[in-house]
Amino acid sequence: MSRSNSFARKVAYIGAIALLLLPIAALSQPATLNPGKVGHSPGGVLSQLRSRYNLAQAELGEIDPASETMKLSTLGLRGVAANILWNWANYYKKIEDWDKLEMTVNQIIRLQPNFVEVWDFQAHNLSYNVSVEFDDYRMRYQWVKKGIEFLILGTHYNRDEPGLLRQLGWFVGQKIGRADEHLQFRRIFRDDRDFHQTFRDNGIEVDNGLGPDGKPDNWLVGKLWYEKAVNAHINAGKPIRGTTPLLFYSGAPMSIMNSAAAMNKDGYFFENAQNEWRHAKEAWRLYGDRELPSSAGFNIHLNEKEPVNERIEKNRAELNRLCPGAEETIRKEKIDRLSPEKRAVLEMPAAERAPEQASLFYEADQETKVLPRDFIGRAANREDRPRVRQLVDQIEEDEQTKHQIDLNRRIVNFEYWRTRADSELTEEAPQAHSSVYDADKLQTSGENLGKARDLYEKAWKLYATLFEKYPDLMDNAEAQDLIESVGHYRDVLGQLDEPFPSSFPLWALLDKHYKGQQIRDQVKLLQGNEPGTEKKEEAKPDAK
Image (cartoon, rainbow, N blue to C red; front, side, top):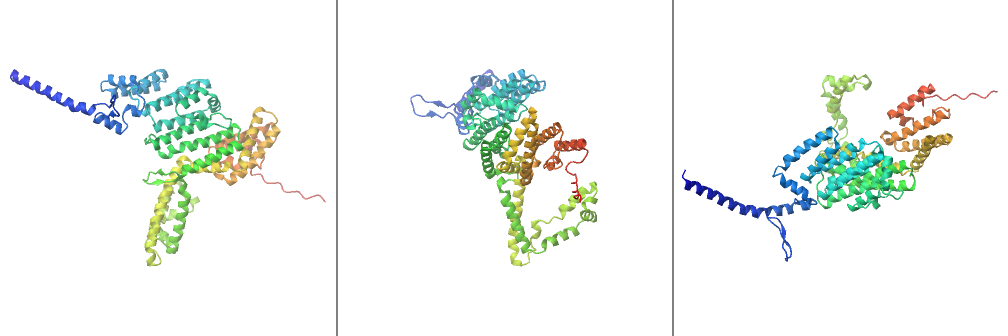
């Protein structure tokens, strides 16, 4: 190859590079203000795309010069550097070296300020992992604050990010309100004016979340963060990340429920608590009316279960009227098609069925169920067949809807909290809570045990009435707090040298929980009989 050809080729390469720089410059030109002119230059294509889809750092959140410098210094290897730092962060977390973990995560957020998971990761470490390393609850509270403040910093870099805002609601409510030190944490939070000002500086008016003592309540302040997350999703159009809409929208109403329940534990039972329970009931109703997506691909409303059930029962009744005797005939036909083994186990009494036959019975039961579709073509009158098909389609659609509603209701314990709010608005609930609260205080102090016994026994009668109206309340874990008070009542009777009464109204509650069964067994062991099963002594005839 001649020297002239080599030179010409180099000139051609340089010319091509120069030509390519022109479209690259046009594509990547930044948006700039035009001094002295109205408006601004939208920049190149990439700048316009960033602006259209809100991808620019200025639109995602604050611009940090140190962060931008670190991004540039990696020379395109930011992802590699972040992965290496994540490995170190996980290692430091494993060996519980919290200082190095904090420094490493701070480097990660400089490289990836818009990676939401890193903010959640470090906030959880500070509030949950690091805080428990200290013995003094006041130091633990300070580290919980650090985690919350770290999340708040994350909202500066990720403006209107629903995931971070929702996590703030969770940390303020759950971490402060359900920690082992929740009594101390809640008390400190109410008086932590500097922390309250931090919330105000970030758009949370804590005065809208005041408890019955006129001070900010952590549950109600957490509700304000949840509501801000919902507003960011609806008004700013930001997607929900890291959770389902079902749980995302439950945060605010559940915070009101938890606030009302906390009032009962703090000694507020009547007007203040009742008003909060009314508020909680209404918030739960609105939550149940909200349209939510289901895993089946259609939307549901949690409050629709009862109307859907009524429609199913009404349509089934009409189906049986149009196809008289069809249900029995269909079931008999299906039984006749079973294998002899399945037919035998299906007809066998449950008490005689061996454990290994359970799966065979289940298969037989499923194969002999009468489905709505089985009624097609069985109308007594030919002209009713189109109506039968219409009813079948409606019943199948409603049953699928009901199934999805049931699944989602169980996830958020929807029926329990609706029932709980209803029960707390009865006449019995506040008086029962108040009597147990006062009795527990007397039992702890060891003073006036006779009065404590009378208050307990008054409360048991009220609770018995309450559980008769709302039996589902006995099945929930919340009832275990009441069982602890029953244990205190047993201790009071022991100190008064009195037997545990066989007529105790809450035996059914004790039988549903392990701690309650322990109390019953202890009473049986000490008193030598089975509590709640003693026979009444027959009245002796008067002597003549």
